[in-house]
Image (cartoon, rainbow, N blue to C red):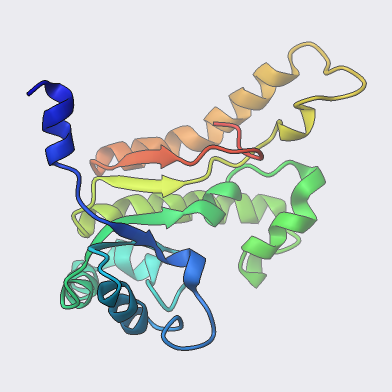
Length: 200
């Protein structure tokens, strides 16, 4: 078999992204409930959205190996693995154009709403915590959004001024490089989900 055949043998799963099913009603309002639901449907893995604090306390996971071991043990007790942690909403807040501040404030904790600078700093710290938590959980990949400073200029009128795109990506790099360095130090790959509204 060629390389393609080998890689097909290592595919695991199926897995499910829990964020799509979170609800106030059981079984979608507790980690145990969601694990049992996923396992009963035949899933082998779950991707955990870190903004749902009833599923994971990300700050605690970054600080405590014991907490991570207990979390992993609970998930494993249902015959499931954690495939990745996800910071889609927090990653989006790493880079928000001021025109979108009001809309994206919905993704931030109340303490950081109406304060774009503090919100950005919180998002960057949160992503770094996700890198450490991923390592503590034995994960080597992480799912997120990049945020966007340039999306509103995709098809602008009047035309973009010269240098605007370069300036936007320079600022995006300034915010993301320290995060990417932290992921690198923890041996975790960042996987950007790409679609309109992201500037990877």
